[in-house]
Image 1 (cartoon, helix red, strand yellow):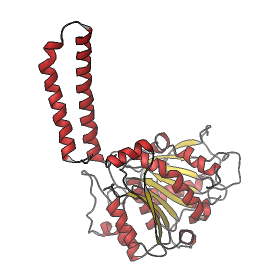
Image 2 (cartoon, helix red, strand yellow):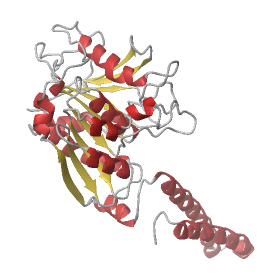
Image 3 (cartoon, helix red, strand yellow):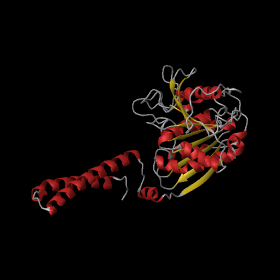
Image 4 (cartoon, helix red, strand yellow):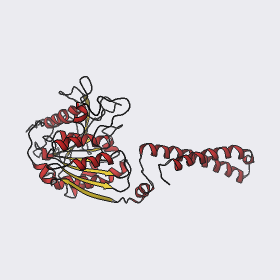
Length: 377
């Protein structure tokens, strides 16, 4: 019996309705003021409320596939999820180190001192206006420990894209990206980076998928891949080398991470894609172009890699049980050829949820430290 199948879901609904009707029928018999009757009333109400919550939870899970099946649910409880690692294309180290021509952020040799006070967490929030895109959004910056005292050291950049609907603060509040990065750095498996978390949802509430729409529509790709890197390069001590710039994203942000890396190899040498996909998946209220249009073809990343493979390396997570990411990831793996390199971690039975991706982040960051020269400790 499937966790998301109609038999199980309909059965829970029927059981809830039957329990509710049973309480109505039996309630007159439970009104006597004896301890047993009081306990019966409490138990009946608790059972009905529990079944109502269970009905809501199972319906939400079927819609969003937080848990793809009983095995996935069991794995979430035990912490054990079977995985397979696949390699496609060229070597990851070689892909990330090949020189590429194209637009890349200008990096100041001596950026101005920080104008915002930096607390013990190293997290600073800014409002940034993009000169090229015309968009204005929030950008969170997680500075590595010692940034304010090591006045001459330059750092690699990890640009982190959140999912939809979400906000940059999710990386801090839910993913705890600062603590996870610091743990991998302390283990000497990653060079400490500046973590940059820009708004992806511009305008707020619209699922733009991080792409540039036609004239008059939001130019979010330009904001993420040109304006934000330019701003970072002018305000922070960062390395001016694509091997020291990488992306990371989950779900819709995973598409953004793949898109930024594949379409802008002069800026980013590596990308980490957690439960992402490789062509836009717009919501019901915003679809700026069709899949067969010029822009649709541009953002079909599997076709892009098949046509002209960029020298970048990707770490990709998906699961056989994740319909959001699996088929799209399989198409990318089938299209990948040198000099693009893909390390795919394929889980046997996992859903599309934060806890899966949070558990895999240290593994992905260790891969980054091993294969991108700018992140190598």
